[in-house]
Length: 434
Image (tube, rainbow, N blue to C red; front, side, top):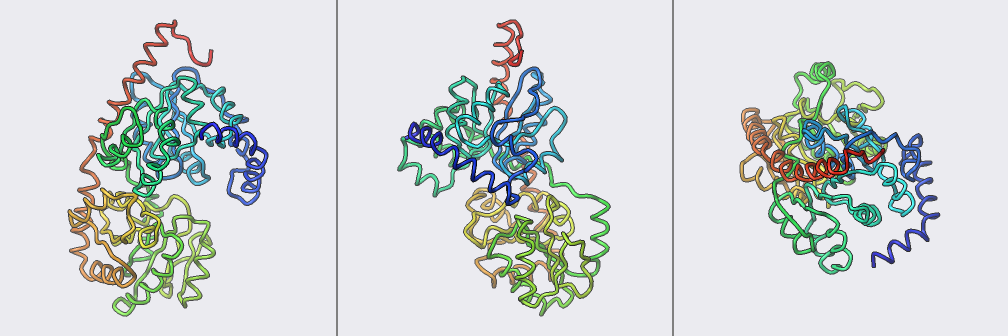
């Protein structure tokens, strides 16, 4: 079946490239660096050891940052190449990657772009974050005897059920990894059942991600703008949730007439559509991307900008985590937890199953089923600042309790770097690019 996939990818290459160009014309691909998606016009490969880290999008690439920083500090002193596939992740990586690391768009999963990519970069080690599997890229990397490690692997219950019925597809892909590291024991067991060769469960890398940053000057300005008003934040919302937040705002306003609701959509490009929805519901809306100010008459502040969640987590102590009242799987509750926010979330949190379970057990998060439940939760948190603060403190404690995870993950990756060093020493110290 994988052979059929590889053949089909060759035959479909013209159509795939046409599709990518259409995405570029629609603003969904980077027009300046579009050639990278085809394995062309890439930055020069740095001399010496190169560790390639593939992270699908924003969440995965942020999870990779602690590993990147620690790898750069090791005695191997490798260069780091990070690949992602989205515009948003590329922008964030441009802002946050340390010196010694660079970003590249991942090539589309066609044989020729993949081979051009690997011919150019010749990585010594490949780390794949979480669970984005591209067959051509994985099989070609493995064919070149480049060791591959799956890090922070997560396979949802639904994906696990599907893959169990397709062992002839998933087993050859998982067997390309020399080592697979699950986020927890459940993930490790699923990986083993599906055919991964060597599996461990050192813990979830998301526990050791740095707190989301914020501009202190802008935080002071926003704090002044919102001063004296009760406020709550709906963070990383998805389609269908803004309508719920709109109704919750209306219900809360009966108890808190001076309320300010802040919405940060998961995808800022939806800002115009969300603005229309909220105005149609009769709300007074200030839109951040338009430079609007939240005045006394503003009901909802729509923060449809990129990379500013850290600012709003510091501004609002009561937070609803989006992606959880619709069938998306939730967003990362550790991010507001790190900054001491009290958290409410819906029932659809399977992407962060164990984290949510720990937070609920530790009374650091409230699970709600629907709009009425969210109204009650926010009424409670806004009415009782002491309880809200205590819940946020518990959330911060849980979020910061597992810093040892990073060391455990690095201890499992380091032997691969040692093997690379020994191999280069045995061959006279030759570099992959010389």
